Amino acid sequence: MAGKPVLYYYNARGKMECIRWLLAAAGVEFEEKFMETSEDLEKLIKDGRLMFQQLPMVEIDGMTLVQSRAILNYIATKYDLYGKDAKERALIDMYTEGIIDLTDMMLRVVTCFPDQREAKISLAKDKAKSRYLPAYEQVLKSHRQDYLVGNRLTRVDIHLLEVLLYVEELDSSLLAPFPLLKALKSRISSLPNVKKFLQPGSQRKPPYDEKIIEKAKKIFKFQPS
Amino acid sequence: MFQQVPMVEIDGMTLVQTRSILNYIATKYNLYGKDAKERALIDMYTEGIFDLTEMMLPLVICPPDQREAKILLVKDKIKNRYLPAYEKVLKSHGQDYLVGNKLTRVDIHLLEVLLYVEELDSSLLAPFPLLKALKNRISSLPNVKKFLQPGSQRKPPINAKQIEEARKIFKF
Image (cartoon, rainbow over all chains, first blue to last red; front, side, top):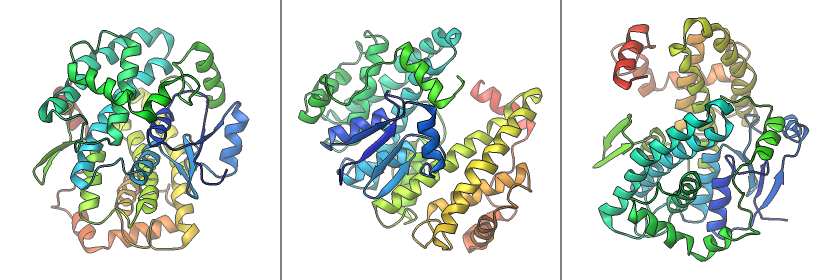
């Protein structure tokens, strides 16, 4: 299909999910090529299409991009979801990086050795409760607007919704003390493109289960850290 | 915002998160390319440099008995993944800078990490003539040259005493 971005990753959330969310929120149709075996990944590497031999990779507008931030930044700019000037972008970047830190913490719950899992879950819950959720509640409280930056939808509202859903999956009581975050979550979820993405049958990926994790380990031959 | 440093006060903002700070500075001083596609390349190359830098940081704080193994791992990535990737970029266009045929932030980031690679093992750069040439070229730019001289705000390699102090402050 000429024109549609093509996403190369495995059939799970991992580091590609935030990209899927952003494209969906922007109303952009995209294709996916899933790695089913380690040979699939090796072929991409051998063909020289992965600058650092890693995924995610996205083909978009004639470019072969790796590194999730590079991909996200390009999509956000293209679809005008990156604020109106450098100062708004600075806030968006700052807020986005915090969300990425929290999302990575939650990803480690899945990728760590099983005996470490309880500890990693505790850490993620603790940091969500005491560091991250209060920080974003505070931003919303400071301006009382419907969106995090610039009084209109930007990428960081989408990133935040995504991580709030993961926090809820981890422990649904974590959001209780944060009324403004809960309101934003409802509001952004109701936007037409987002609502569509949240429905069954979309390209949104489900929570991890043991089967997905085992498959990923085989493809990526990775060791827990 | 997240109870962490670095933090920079700039143009009336209190910014945390390294990438946010760097992106703002690069934009402000026109070191971020001319359009979104150039920015995409700059971001991609920059992120690889960050990954490599992050890999090198723990070498200093890891216990001596694990250090040899970690160093071998990092050197392997440097030799087989990162340096070849950037040499290939320079080879592909034959220009003096990584992106857009003019100086951008990523040339500076690359110089910085090449100096760290050299500190780790000066022979690592030997097979990469274009990287060596870029290193010399960027080092000669007036502002960079000044920063490389003693007495600038450039920080020296970290030593054991500094690690101990950091441990106390950051409780790790």
